[in-house]
Length: 295
Ligand code: OAD
Ligand code: ZN
Image (cartoon, rainbow, N blue to C red; front, side):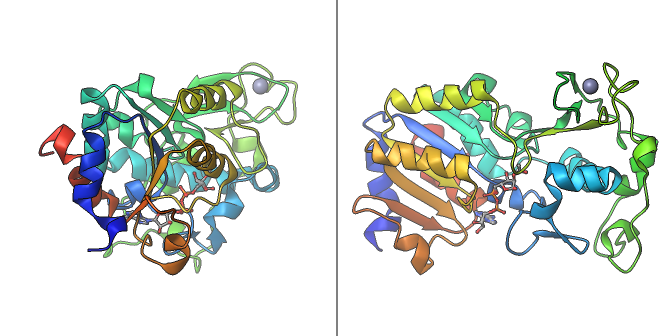
């Protein structure tokens, strides 16, 4: 077995009670049935998921962007945490020296009872709403209604392989939802043209919440012995910068990713680093088994 994928060598590190930073991405939730952003599953209708996650896309067609998020919200509401989420939740419940920064907006770590004080969600949450007017600070947790609003019902139809919904089929035109049909912000929507309710998600080109970033940076500055990159392509800058920050402060890097054995990932390892290639759902319970037992 190559040194970089040796479970026993990883387990030996755990006995020294290291400080562990977890950096999670969409691959963690892939085995819960939720699509990732890049690679296979990164297309929604004829659009790249990445192209819809922008303020420009919302300004151009808020109804389309809402349908995309309503579909992701519906899927996330129906999804269950997988053994990977449960392993991380058990780790954080049983072990003090761990902190997690997640790019995921699906709420699955929370559903697995991951302790919230050890979790920072840098890209927001599908279950939150805010105002599209940048000068307005209105925010709300949205209801658990599914669909969220009647106009979003096409995104909440149940899908399976025998029953594809028209919304997902680019051959059917997407339902057209006009700007006027999107619910207005209760604070400024009566006067402001841009006062529309939008998902409380950090889109491309938008700043992260300063407090959230500061909490993560402070935790890293307190020392990180091991940093795990879990199911993320590491292409989005903030997550990549946390990984870089922890590694340049001396942390051992552990890549847990379907693609971890590909040459460009292996080439990114230092001498003592690890790469575990496979499904995060299978790997995480094994990696933390000495602390969490069987999950
Ligand atoms: P990506 O879709 O970019 O990458 C997902 C990664 O997970 C890829 O490297 C896959 O190889 C890996 N993967 C897929 N299935 C896996 C599995 N079962 N087990 C382990 N690994 C698996 O997702 P992120 O890196 O999370 O931002 O993307 C970062 C951000 O880009 C997202 O948070 C989103 C997007 O724009 C916002 O929405 C703001
Ligand atoms: Zn507003």
